[in-house]
Image (cartoon, rainbow, N blue to C red; front, top):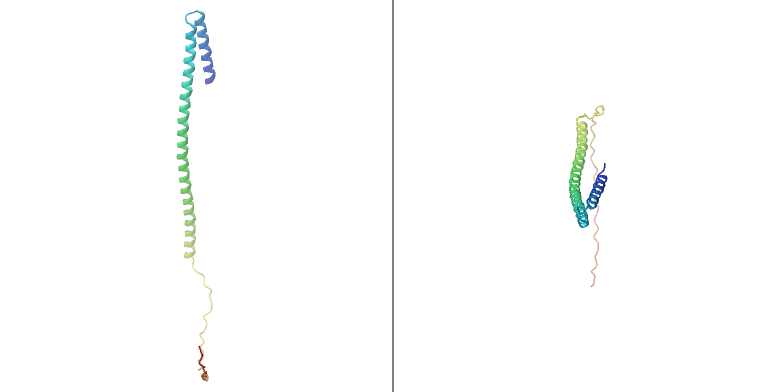
Length: 139
């Protein structure tokens, strides 16, 4: 049975019990009203208590969610760094392999060095500089 059906059954049983007592005249109708008012107050108090408990649970779950989000963000940052480190490590390994490979040089036959003949340059005639006449400028 669900909780609501239990509560409903308890309420019905309590009403029937109070009616039987009132029929037997062991209780007065005022006591019946008082007990109903007390019952209503108790249900209000229980509802408030349940609401307060629910609020506390919500606050706890929000705090836990924030904590989990912080952990997730830190793990994501760490994962990003690890990926970057892996890429850099791969680049380093490829560069190491390139350095280890011997460079292939083309085998070319050795050329004989030809001595060049030196020739003397002929002296070019010197140019004469012409003196220019300058006139005095008036201010």
